[in-house]
Image (cartoon, rainbow, N blue to C red; front, side, top):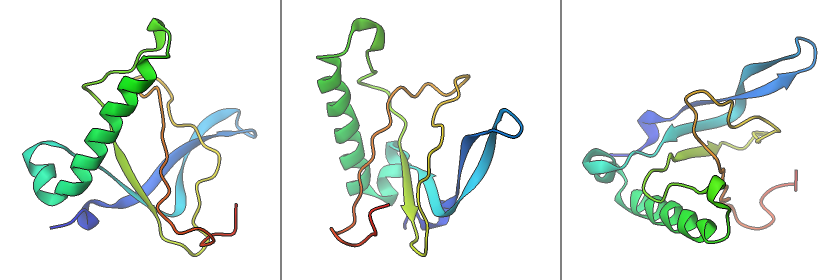
Length: 122
């Protein structure tokens, strides 16, 4: 099994000056999926689930040691997303991660897994 069948074009939002509103758009050459924990998620990608759960739990704990009480992060509940840039000009341009409402994200952390010199620095 793999995450490949769950990958979909990555959708983001950005501010549109012309309409003076936030608009959704599809990132060119970027696909994403949620990394699900639990028995089913673990069965599909055990090492990835273990890595992400450990990373996000430890990152939250460490940040909570220095963040004010009003900005504390949950150490037991995280949302995780895996995004893959397919090359050929794909990139993450400036966008909005959290519009409020049901989205409770307070922190976005990025980890790039490409070898040094494999991109043009943009």
